[in-house]
Image 1: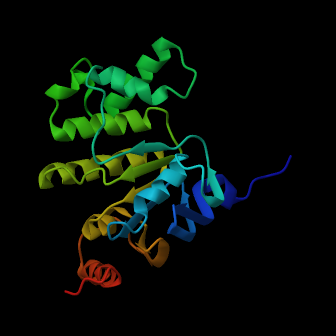
Image 2: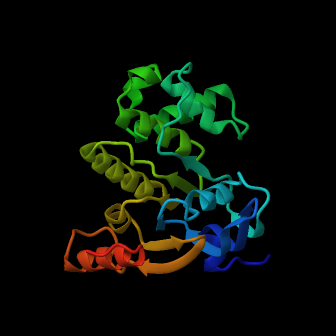
Length: 242
């Protein structure tokens, strides 16, 4: 039997030499990007730089790009807006995250309740989405994404619509779940501070190309002078002078 290398066994998802066009517009140019299990990669860039398009390719929502896409198992995707079904209760919204897997109803409900326990919302299982706060709705969205136990979690500005305190709480929850389950994360964000606070690597996308990569040698530590230097470095690559 052929043994897999460490590189192969830790892979969550990878793009190699990906190009994509919208009509005559070349939106992704030779993009190569790898995310391993247990790794958080943040993707930042100006509006229209192609960040969400990269997530769509990773998620399998694009079938007209060129290049190679490798994802271990079905990826999970969560957006800035929770996108919950208003006619379904919280538990049933989470069960929807298993729609691509063959589970009995009993097993699906049990897994949904475990996912809700992970995000601290077991007591709201039968609530309707309209009764939830913004933070609670985003927790349900995260539970729905994680209920199928993905290898790769794709996050598109997941905390951007939340108030500052709820955003900090959601960041902490994401890190707790990531440490517990060990999935890989690709996080699209406009927030440079959020990228530095959460990621092992930060990639700057510029006009559809990965223009710069910052590796955080001590990820997820308290703010320091080095954190400020990283922030200034990334803002400079985005064309922001401070």
